[in-house]
Amino acid sequence: LHYPLRRQRQMCIRDRIVWALVSYGFAILLRPLLSGIPVGGTDLGFWFAQQGSILVFIGLIFFYAWKMNRLDKKFGLEE
Image 1 (cartoon, rainbow, N blue to C red):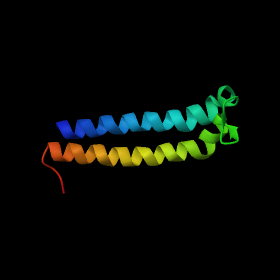
Image 2: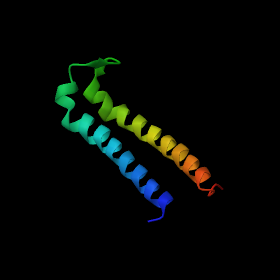
Image 3: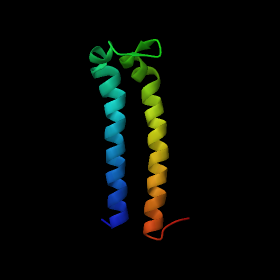
């Protein structure tokens, strides 16, 4: 594959791993372990299930856009 496409695919895979870890790992699988840690009046496992995974997903969107803009500029593909 062309180098920018390979880098884009690597970033997508990395972002999906982070998203899956936060959404499924912290919110569902690790919830019993996180239930003793208080955050904002509730436990950390519930927080990840309700708000944390959404905030991380939004953060990943902005991070991906920022990294792709840098990659585009590096290879002269900017809009």
